[in-house]
Length: 306
Image 1 (cartoon, one colour):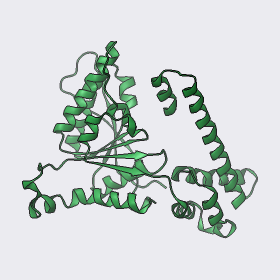
Image 2: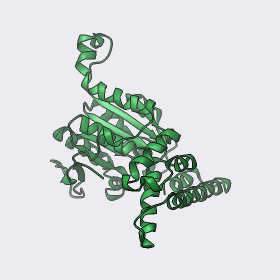
Image 3: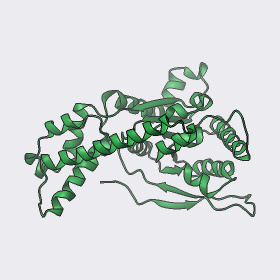
Image 4: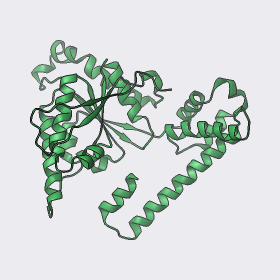
C-alpha cells in the first residue's frame, strides 16, 4: 500500500509571463515508497545503494579521498533508470528521494508539451527553477520524450521547436546543481549528448525465478498462503514484471470475490497470469504487424507507447 502524505499540487511562479503563457502545475509530494518496498535482483539493488552513496558520501569522496583534484567538484545527481515497464523504476525513484529526505517533483513531459504548445522550453526552465527553490528530487517519467535524438533535417516549425527544447534541456543539465532522476522504457531513443550528461544509467530487469517468488510472497496475504503453491506460480510467470505479478494476485482476488469466495487459489492466480501473457502476445503481434507494413518509424514508435 502506498506510503507517505497525499500529493500536493503547486503552480510554478514566473516573473516574466507573456500574455499567452499559462500556469504550470507541478506535483510535489512526499515519497510514497522506501527501499524496503522494492524487490530487485542483487545487481540492480547494488546499483541503487551505490546511487545513495553518491549523495551520502559526496564529501568523503571529493574531499577526504582527494577526488576534487581529479574530477569536477559538483554536487549534482543526474541518473537514468531504464528497462521493461513495471520493473520498479518509479518505486526506486521514490525510495531514493526518501533516502535523501526530500520531496519528489513528478514531471509528465507529455502533459507539458500538449498543454503548452510552443512554450515547452519556458516550462522546462520553470520546472528546474521550482525544483531549485524547493530543493526536491525531479523525476521525469518516460524521459525519452524530452531526451530523444534531435531532428537533423528540419522541415517544419515543429522540428525547429523540438530542437530548441533539446538545446534548452542540454543547457539546463550543464548548469543545474540538483537531483534529477530520468526513467524510460526506450533508452535507445536517447540522444548521445544527453547520455553523456547523465552520471549513471541503471538497468531494471524482469524478475527471475527467485525474485518472482519473493514478489508472490509479498502480494499474497499470509492468511491465504496455505492455499497457494508459490513455487508453481513463480515457475509459470517467467516474462512477467513485478507490476504484472502484483496485478495478477489482486485480479485473482476480485475474481474470487465475484464468485462469493473469500479465498484465492493457485488456479485463480494462474488464470490471471495466462490472461496477462495472452495480452502481451497480442500486443507483440500488433507491433510486428506495424513494422511489416512499412509504416513511418515515428508512427510505430507512437504505437509502442500506447
